[in-house]
Image (cartoon, rainbow, N blue to C red):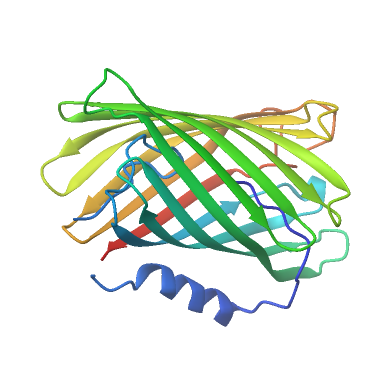
Length: 281
């Protein structure tokens, strides 16, 4: 998801950031249902009655002074409680927050703020079990609501494991309503990942995604391609996944100067990174 909220704003100092970051990485130990990718979902769902807590920390960093956001960082935080309704149907409840900081090069002022981005309910249904079919298939829908904003995100999820190799491919569409639900924006994304298992505890590979924004569905505003490494470490009851993906190509199709002739630094960032920590109960 690509939150860009402008609501529920309070001042944020470094101690707020440190507190949230410590929550993300200091999860105590609680079998695990790990993610082997940070941006791509896999078709497998949770076993029936299985329960897991996940903490998501995403960093989007680096926009251009040309667009008035120098030294830009956006931390996106998600607290997830995931439960297996059946062996094929999994639901997750999320709390979503974000912390944004940048310097306005015109005034020299730093703008720091914290946003509560609402509550969302993820639904995943496994149509084809990859253990029984050549390719696994799952369908996904996630509504989000935060008072003056709402979003509905849908995914088609494909994937399979071949020996020590595992891949996943996602097609994602989302519609976001903002400004007290009076305006809307579409988002379209394709992501793919491939990892190799390295023993019982580690996996490592590569992940790529292309993200696009369509304001009011009237025009294709921009596109940004990210590509980088992803790694997972897992134990019986917990796991950690980290991906670091720089933007390698981007275009702003409506002619907004972004300070780069090969990257989109107005609607996207130079770097996207994500850390996910999961604990099973």
